Length: 590
Image 1 (tube, one colour):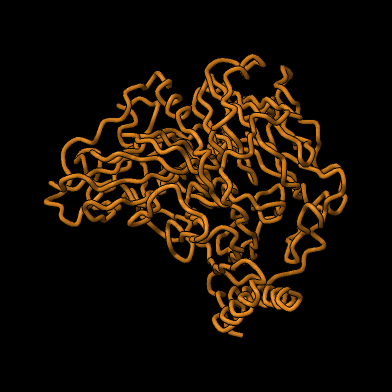
Image 2 (cartoon, helix red, strand yellow):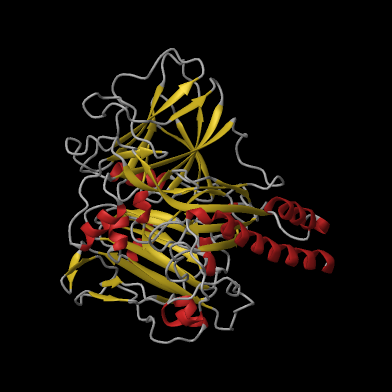
């Protein structure tokens, strides 16, 4: 059966009696291509030959079906940063819940963006692969019946910013395995392209740069994602205000910035009005933060904002960044100023702030402290509470399902310990419907950003020094922003609160690729003591992959690589047919 007729039939059935939420289907071939974003040919990871990958443009409550063909020469997963996978960690795309897709195989993700809006991105989380690309945007629009707390923009742009190395991700991985630092990045890309030639000595000839075309007087929404390796970036547009309105699924109180620090893994939405006289084009800049400018001068991304009536090319010096190389208070105060808009709805009509998180009793407290890299058994490693995480060969949620013991332990310490650091697969044991407080304590010398899969959390406090129980007196218990990735400054702490309303096994990690790769992560196992499998938690999908202790259960799949897109389409058709059957059943039951 051809994909298009099947899709049309499915949509027709789905419309019967409003039987189900809409479906969006994507067919992706993840492969290597050669690109030269900084003037040197190198291997990058593309999706359907595109770098960056396509935008997943969907609406609240859509069901998303993504068939992924792995045409790389190594295992692959795709994780969906910020998508909450309500009670469905099977689609999370990390090693704690999923076996990797072998080279030449395909696997279909199927998840719902239940009660979500906002700006997110996806990427390959294994083995430093994001340092080679494979990332793309996720835009979750409001349903038509839910108003947006600002006028409809005249256009919508997604901008990926991030530090970049000319070395392949496999070379970067080997450097870390050998105990070396990655060193200063070779540049900053914007939408996979190098910098505009704003400086003849810093930017070589022949670099392709990004241009964003706009009309005078109009207002555009810019969704900006830091998809880089480990560098915090300051984002700004010459002579234009950035009106922040949303971050990672929450509408914020609208406030204007001339520049904003965007840390690794973070996403922000700005409204930008084209209110300048267009005497020339304008610079869009993302430059490295908290570094020695004389050493890091090349680590600057520059794109062009081009008015339709522009009278010439951009020239002259770039707009100045904040001048606080050794003082991060300015950046922390920026972060503290971001507040949730508690008077508006988001995915539902009720106000975002109606949850009243500040009035809920905390049932579990964890303080997670990272330190500078240490040596364990002769290898350079990073830690949380003295434990350097090592992923077991069998995904933990899969081990639970099949009652395989000894795969991991539930003895992750609630507070930092003073014992010698160890390598292990220790995770946090939590209970469904509990309310958890997590304090991230950064005792390293550079900014770390932390992400929790499957959840949004309230950022309630951050400050310098060591967190103590008295620090709770400084918490914002009313309109702290709800998001999925937060920065933690060196020598400082950040506190978050989260409601454990989604059973499963969920990744807690730094988004900095080097420290993540070396072990700075853990998982939270959220268990329903009433036995919620197939009740409060979705069952494992029929197409689940098996590995580790369960590898004998895996049925063979003939590798087909990039040349086998027909096989990939056939696999998608089979999945569509299964969805079609389920919709038919639902339609006729109702």
